[in-house]
Length: 554
Image (cartoon, rainbow, N blue to C red):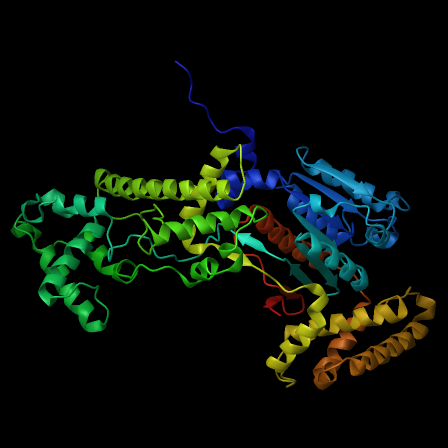
């Protein structure tokens, strides 16, 4: 007799994350390819958080050598490595974290030269990540990636401030994993097989045990039919009066001839559950607005041989809703846990899962016809079949994320400020948009002086000179702010305090801030690679002073 097979090594190693994104999510991650530009403390923290969960491969682009400054903030370098290529050193150490991950590096030429020569293939990556890259280089890269439709995550740490900026032409969210979802049970438009099952139950002649273990879903359906008969209506209870009447019907149904005098004060848990779940069960089944927008999207309406498979499946779902679905999405096939016996619960699960399989099969047939119509043939039918089932299971939560381009950020930032006036009251903490504006001014400072404000070698013997230079840099930074269109309106004590703080930072890289932003950026990269969970849209700002984060969209 063969022994039952237990979990393999990979399942044990990645057990916790498999609970988050499943086997198919892990498979997507293991086939993912990431390019990191900048092997500094921030960059290595990002890759560390991607290598450990099993990223497929990474490429580091960094032409700089290891310096003593790196040794003070980057745990992946050591003083014995000074003057060695930083890309090679960090690549070797990162690969040791997970032997299953393949890592390469490019230490010559610079990223600027690579972009100008256009000799490096960025289209091979699922996502490109930058770590503390100068703004002019970042803009060049962002424009190039926008043309290739490759997502870009621009991460940055500056003293106690950290930011992540996502640029994505079009990112498809297949499994959003939303919180507090309403189950897809359709009591207002019940499934045919569910109706047959409910009608097969002779409610008046149930035994005591059968009545005690009757699933709350069936109780609600029986109550709906009785309430509709009493009120001469065909819809669900809507207002307070309707629901009070409906609860009275539930109370009547809870009394049964099978109970004796000893059951008089007995609490019927299944009926109490029915009352408790009224808000989430007695809901109208509709197509969510986000799905309606997808159906009306130009990419869905105008399919071509170059269209992404996402749009083909969305079009197939649309055809289903217009025909067999009768205006509804495919059944999700999930039944929440409820107070009943095993056989009764399993029967309900079978009803909804069988209908979900039938709906998915119909959608797969529509998909096959669409692919054939547009000369998109695939030899991986089994893979497409599984993909359709995933789409159908998450049909209510499918989304497309389209962020703004980095090249338009200045204009969009000005509009954001105009629409969201900044409160300069000294009693309130500075809003994070002020820090983001301050960082953009530091970028302008860098463009002018080829260094960041307050960034210069510090010497004890020249402390007075350094203090004077800080004051000069601060004044220059203020002048740059005054010359920037619309930002001069934000002059005030708070903004001056922010500029003073940023000048004091001198573009320093603090490891705790890099570790936090690195972890967050790695999470966003995993979302992009697995197409699970919702990525940020479009800027995250972390304020290490207040230990708070905020998301800015412009």
